[in-house]
Image (tube, rainbow, N blue to C red; front, side, top):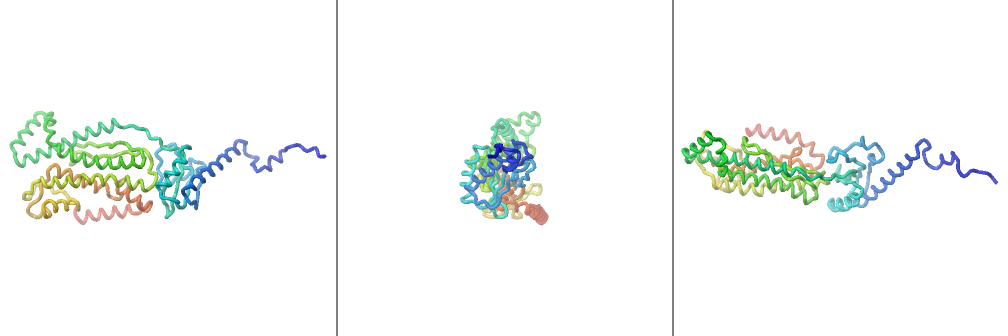
Length: 373
């Protein structure tokens, strides 16, 4: 009988482990391998996997290359893995199913498309939205109300001077003597203020409620006052507190704002034009631009396009608010960058949208040059 010890150093070297690694390193490798298996199993419930990248699990997470279109709002979040393949169901159902599996482990799936393939990125560290900013939103809104009331009042006094110059001059003289008296005339600016806030508010609330529908946390609108400009405001914006999880959400949220704004801008501009005066063209007047929708609104209202060389419509507060609403909507729909149009274009064609930015800018500059603005 051989007197053989139960184990030896050589036995330890032949058990499949690396003898040069400390004991805890083997445990880490096993944990990483388990995480890979668990992640793959979860993703396979919604995706036929063709390629996978575990750089975030096996490598140094801090140096793992992040796709250009992947924005993580939580600075502590880390990209763990990416999977390429084909979804086995529609994106919304697949996302809901996979998100439910990953949420207990503080992981977040983000759906994208690359080169015709569905891509699922798995992120460690979900965004935990912090409610706040309501007081800031309220204060900015109240300042914007004053700002647009001021502009509306100046427009109302300008309209009054065209029909009753003496009355307008009397009011202006009182305000010049005591600037605080302008607040007593703010009731005159209510038509413009109410209309423009309705259009801009509808636009931003369209984004807000669509975000809530998709369970993406968003702030209330932040209005930007600017009493000395042509509009009385620089518009409004909301802040998303979570990343877009797939391109359908981006399309829905991006399109909801302009559509909601148009629902109010179109009837307001029609009512405004119908209540505005058509008079002989004055050489001192300022001619507002005519977008396609605005030109159609003129034709619908007057039965012809004006100016026609002899007369033009002198827009009142409501018409100006409607024109501004159409202008803001058109500006937002330019398919560039962070504008609503840029989001919509990206949601439809993905990263290929970036290749179109410079041609679009060139086309816009050429159009301005050809039309004189």
